Image (cartoon, rainbow, N blue to C red; front, top):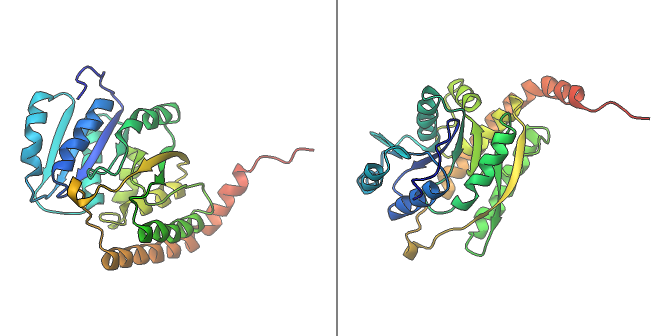
Amino acid sequence: MSAGLPASSTHLVLIPSYNTGRLLVETVRAARAQWNPVWVVIDGSTDGSADALQPLITADPGGLRLFVLPHNQGKGAAVLHGLRAALAAGYTHALTMDADGQHPPALIPAFMQQSLQRPETMVLGKPVFDASAPLLRVRGRRVSNGWTNLETLGAGIGDSLFGFRVYPAKDLATVMAQQPWMRRFDFDTEAVVRLAWRGVKPINLDAPVKYPRPEDGGISHFQYGRDNLLLTWMHARLMGEFVLRLPLLLLRRVLRRPPFQR
């Protein structure tokens, strides 16, 4: 960790975690080496994650903060818990990243810098896969990306599922408070769709993604049947709302179109 990094008063790193084992400690160390502060939300884990982080918290109370939820509520719920605490503390933006070693901590400063320059935007990671990526998941996300492109009238979202992102905290907390969804695996996709509907523009930055092997501590809670059904239900809901919002979205596009130049 880099205790000497100056603390940001506006942007923090937010890491939700559920039973990610020793990879959580590695991820937190790597994130803290790149940014100050880093907040972790333990989402009802039963693997001793909170206890494993305590030495880091004790050694770095100013740079690390830990929240422990009493039972598993889902990634979106954990992020929302952290967002509300961040807003109460005066922060305006949060970079979310997974705790399982898939996301690149070294890119945290670059993503934060983009957000600092354009605070009205959401800075989205666009995954660059290596050979460790499961082919079925790589192909499957193309379907979700296609639906997202339609639901936002081509707002420019590079990837709807990659959770390495900088969000405007107030905008995200507001859209989440307005409906009961976005609390589990549907969080990442629905967040960018609803923020785009709200007028938050995306900035896309390439980011390498890796899938740690089981022997390296890699673990996945993704269940193809359950989570694909959840995504299907999510897109069905979003398409229903999209139809109702279509006149407003079309009007917004027309108003933002540059005037014709002769």
